[in-house]
Length: 137
Image (cartoon, rainbow, N blue to C red):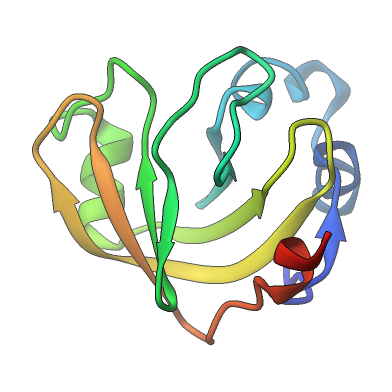
C-alpha cells in the first residue's frame, strides 16, 4: 500500500485502506506500532503526550525522526530485530497534538537503534519527510 507523503490520515482510514479485519482493529493499532502483513505501521506523537498519557521524547533531527518504542521494549524482541535488520517495510505517521490525524512521513529505515529500554530508533526516510504541514497546524 502506498500512502501520500505529507497527507493526513486517521488510524481508522489507514485500517480501511489496508483492509484490516474488524477483529484486528484494536490492540496494537492504538498503542504506537503494529505489524500488519509484512509491513510495520508506526504512530507517534512529536512534542506532545499521547492519549494514554505517555510522553515519549520523540523529535525531529533534521530530516530524521528519533523515536522511542514502547516502555518495555528491548532489542531482543522480534519486532525490534526486524526494525534493526530492515526486513519489514515500515511506514511512519506522526502528529503534534493528541487526537489529531497523523501525517504520513514516509517509508522509513532504521539508521540507528539503541540497546536501551525503551528502544530508541533513529529513522531515515526513503524520501524526505514532509512535516511542515503538521508543524503549521
